[in-house]
Image (cartoon, rainbow, N blue to C red; front, side, top):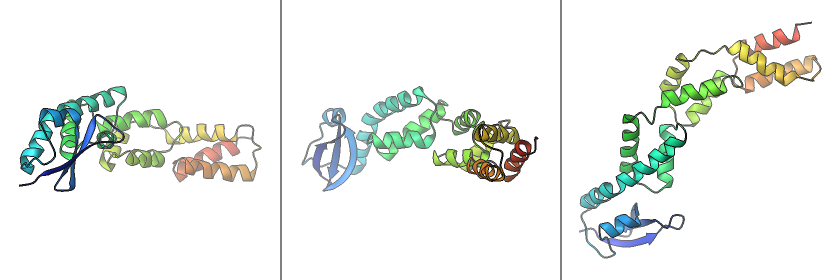
Length: 204
């Protein structure tokens, strides 16, 4: 029968403990869970039963923390997962919370992406926005769906960014080339960058 070999208070969170079974790290649990379930070093316990006990006592606390986290601002599924992982919760608890939050529509990666795109598209092109969203853990299909629901005038936005970039600069060939490269670095397409540069440097 597996045996609890160590219960140690976590260094960064005094309200949680690291639980070791047979000398191996098993899970992070709250001090309250340890007390409630009377867990102690030397106790023999079935792993399946231990997982059930931990799940039952930890899930409400984890869900409360996750709900508070997403209530401050809309978060992606990955951001919630990373947050709960940092808090020391096990994977089954984390996925339970994510499923519940999705059920309540507190996690919606398409909606998150739509809001992000709407707030950032005036200064960033589509390619850069896609990269940033996927870096936040949004999958490609959700990003694609979000862009499908957003009306973006990439050429117009590219021109606005270019106008700001060349403000107080001489309209030279060198500045024209730098402006083009800058727009590409901001995620605008070649066509959008060409349009903006042509509009600005052929006005005279």
